[in-house]
Image (tube, rainbow, N blue to C red; front, side, top):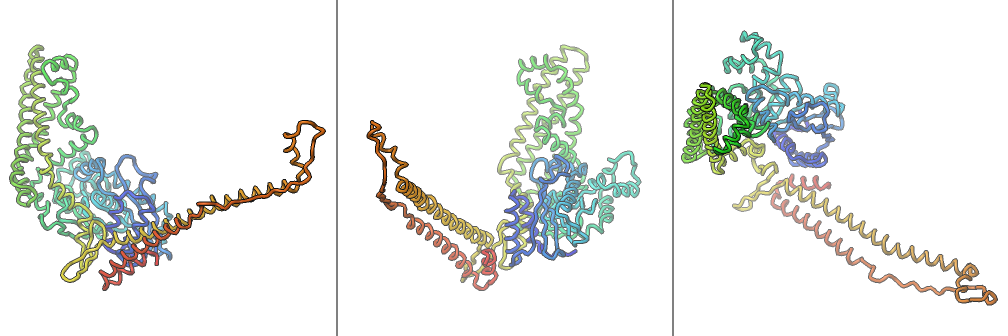
Length: 617
């Protein structure tokens, strides 16, 4: 089915960006209408319904999935469109999923939740996609492309998928998630059913080619816009990843050649070692920080090690935690060789990796030298730890208790020094000037940089705001039309609200002062009328002046001479007038602001039309 409501890449990108704004449904609907107005120059005729994943009841807990469904419901019902925007990486849960799902292919829970959420949304809105001809479309950025595409390939969740700077599909992930694909892979490559991890031993190029051919029909409905400077595009050359669909590659940052060309030069075995180390490190770090990393990767119990900061405390801790120390040392001896192998694989390629960064202009040569030096220092400290452990295990195997005690304490003190040195190197690598490149990389991953690259003619984008440019003489003038329309619309809304509040204030004045005065005056007059009509009922008023019953008197007539003075200082008409004048001045300012912009773009009649439409004229 062909979309008839959302038809441009710019609108899709701005729609995806709204998912990150964390705004209410009412505000999202308002912004969608304005974006539509800006992009198409007319009001959106469809109704909008919003459903968020936080409202869903069928999702798996703690997967990190987050998304919003937007239903465009047209009046005749034959052009309805449902957009499910899966949100990209935003927190530590997502990035743990990135490592486990995209690099290792071991997790596909967010893709499952993408499908569950879409199905629940369809039921929520009462959509019958075949009967109502409703297009079910996935929109995504970053990690969310992996979610939407995986759901599309396995479950047929979407009619189409549109993505920007997405984390590419992973054939390892599909192997574990798609049973039919896994069976066909095993059959084609003669794999054993008893060892699922044998998938990692298949030639990655052959496996990629098989996966591309297997999913080629569904890939026709996948559309991607990718910045060649995007870091996820760079790592997509690594084993496991394959790119599907119609892909438009854009150079969003001409000052840099992009990271993909750098990654291509890194040997596959280096990428594989990085994957394994990154998976282990990220998973452990997310579970419990650096202490858990040290325990899971190296087998080090940091709670015990931190108690042994000098000889006296070491002896004391050794006597208390001897079993824990014994376990820690043997675990460290067992795990360190694998970790050191992976680190050496990276450091042995340091000149290639960081030299390419220098050539590409991401870092200076001095920065490269510093980075290589610190990575080399880390490797040296790991070597020293391994050597210390080798000697220590030999001492412990002698069976001499006193030699063992001295060796344990001496070794732990040495290990503390090596670990501290590694931490110092990591602190150097965290320096602001060394991390500045991450800002460039981050920008190239953003939606706004891609949107900016779609600028053409007089229209461009500042962030996700639309900008129009014009020339007056030799000077180019740019106006943020989105901001101008928001100012005009919100300004008029504020003034309307202010005018309404003035009306309420004037009503309150009449009610609380004038009307209250008249009500009290009426009550007094009713009392006077009662006294004059029934004078004998008020004879008791004389009794306090008469002390003998024989002198008792009767009241035959009462005449009250009333005087009601007018209210003073209660006339607030002047103040009300001043308030109304301020509203008039506000409207004049807003309209002059509009006129000034329209005068700048006198030839562009659509600018005036936008103001008319957003202002409700």
